[in-house]
Image (tube, rainbow, N blue to C red; front, side, top):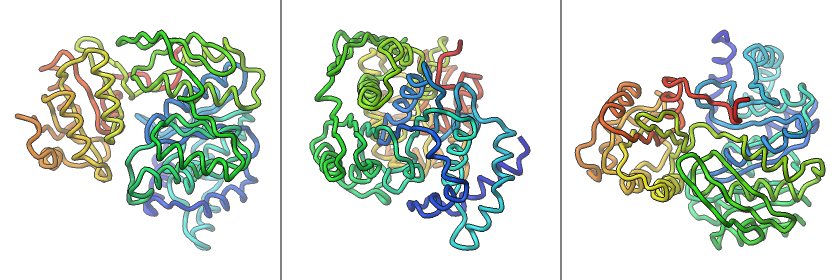
Length: 428
């Protein structure tokens, strides 16, 4: 793709993050409200929202034309917007930018220009409408209530897990953060919650009741049994109020059964009568979520994981422990807007062997030297290697099991180097 069009979008970063729906709503109105031309599912959460969105997309496309909108990407921007099995093409990105520069500049003159995420959200909705998709699975970018994606009226709203992140924007308590996530709940639209923390459950239930929305607490109404997991994935039985499913999933992580339960309950509690038990089981079996507990190499074993906050680090710790993985070499790089100290303290419980490096996002990366300083000596004899690929090659040379974590930008750099697949579905 010519750099100019994508660079034009990236230059919209100058507005930073704006938690405000005014510009997105106006941009959408000027394009004829494309988000109203397809049905959607909306997924929020501190962790688990990406894979949950991918499960929904893969289930829906068993019987329907379906799209997926997620962020960020691992290797190429195009991964963010998928219609059926195809990522948006370079030509389609160029067409959107060229057709809408005038609108972007007009909005800039009247108020402010759309941010990068606002523009890409409208690009996704326009793309799905142009492709005449029946359904789309939409991942929230940040928070929920004021996230750009929140102009949709979905078939169901999903909230996976709620943890401490972006406290400067979402609040400093779990209750306030849960309130922001629950801002995606629409009048009369069912909401499925995967979290069991009391303050989260109470807050989400309260907002659902105020909007006459059915509140479905996944851990209370579903049951996981006969769970068997290894490094290739998991098998288990999922029971819901409507039926029983035999689930096989290739995604690793002890948290995935909860995400799957949320996805299935969302389908069961919305008007998609064409989706059968077999469709659900097949859709889940065909789901991939690259860069998240993703084994991309076997000799030595390399797992890349986008974990970048304390709850995700703890989930990774639990999953690796359940799989019997002890003292892998950690390759870690982080961005400046993350709680690095808390993250590193949890990662130390996974292993004491670490290499600090730089994620492939120069403007926001914490230097490995600074990351080492933040770690405050909790790792003994850490290696510091600025270049991420040089650091990765060193990890391969000294370990039989490498875990790459701390940032999707680091995961993406390693995956591009290994030419690992990045699509959210199994290859045919």
